[in-house]
Amino acid sequence: MASYKVVWRASAERELRKLPREVITHLVELAATLANEPFPHGAVKLAGAEHTWRVRSGDYRLIYSVAGGTLVVEIVKVGHRREVYR
Image 1: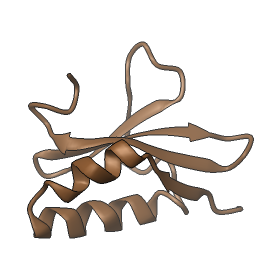
Image 2 (image 1 turned 180 degrees about the vertical axis):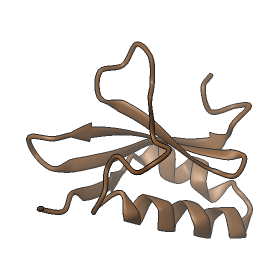
Image 3 (image 1 turned 135 degrees about the horizontal axis):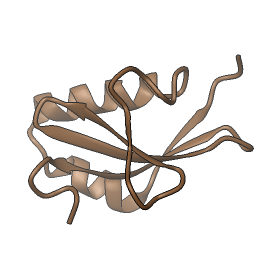
Image 4 (image 1 turned 90 degrees about the horizontal axis):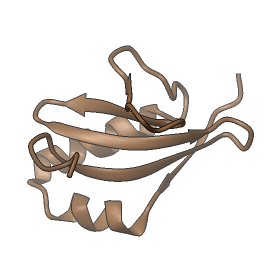
């Protein structure tokens, strides 16, 4: 199976930088695993969006979209669970 390319939106990178250091480490590692498995166990498809998924790391969420034709996983949004869906 070909691996996907993980791309971060500039807005997601800014959100990531505002988080605690240990959370950043976990989320970056989680994003890296999406290159080999874009739909890991625990990934949930978001309602109302065709190609958008979320995966959790503790109280934080990584929202991403998958473009299967071009093998790209784009990290769209990063944040605490109480704020990330706004």
